[in-house]
Image (tube, rainbow, N blue to C red):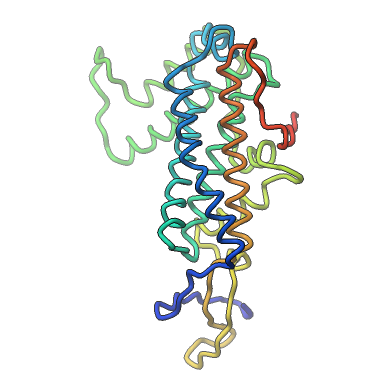
Length: 288
């Protein structure tokens, strides 16, 4: 697109769903993995931590439950979004923009889970990260409760407002002697846990641009300019379709990261006497 402003039009009379056959075959093969990933995650949740595992050790801390709770929750949301992308692919549908929001959710859940079960950090840091995830969850819930004018439960009720949960958890963190860990941004997590040969920040920024309808996201699409006399001066119109290469790359990265995160959760819950099954092809995240 040229000019100061780009106008995107979706041409309903034009078939924009066709992909290159080789890329389509790879895409179908990739999204078909989601059922196996879902079953593996379900087994971890149902089985729980094995005796002697790092997860079992973390649970000795009164606040240790949050590590596995939020790691499996984050990955569960990631898998569910990637399943939605699978349904679109299997249905022969190829949106222009929407699949990028599904891929983005897959990336987010995977790097969050990897941060939580990170085997490189000391147990108290890992547990503190779980507390940070819980506090972030409560803080977002508190914003919702305030915006929705939800009345806090009465004193003595087993149910508590998010604000009350925050105060309680902070007190419990101090009583447990845990360090204060700040919940990181997803962009930071992508830089630390989302890379293969290079970090994942640029990819996350691109898929986020699609989610937030940024004009520059069109750099990640295929565009066919068309002369349209009715447009404003300095504005060029045209037809926009998804970029097969970028969609496939983002999908491969998301599924690879979910696979890596799942393997790390499995290892986190596994007895040390069992073989290591961590995915070796993924580079180790950097540690500050």
